[in-house]
Length: 92
Image 1 (cartoon, rainbow, N blue to C red):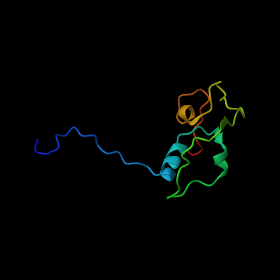
Image 2 (cartoon, rainbow, N blue to C red; image 1 turned 180 degrees about the vertical axis):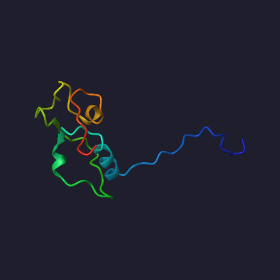
Image 3 (tube, rainbow, N blue to C red; image 1 turned 90 degrees about the vertical axis):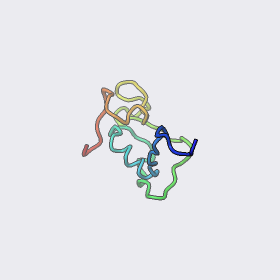
Image 4 (cartoon, rainbow, N blue to C red; image 1 turned 120 degrees about the vertical axis):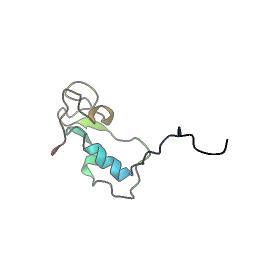
């Protein structure tokens, strides 16, 4: 081969910084999903994410780790519409 690209190479996807990723996630996260980090300022450009998943999540409606529909309160299940108890963030 002559070293030319054959057009089947994967396109590079821009990687969001930690601060950008958090702000993007907050645009769809259920208004009732809470963690202790909600009481801290938003990360600023250049801040590093914690490499260890230490967050404890709870539902603000039920005040426990289960949402109003009985399923786990966690970003993987509460970050987008689809659950019966989902409420969009204010201003969305």
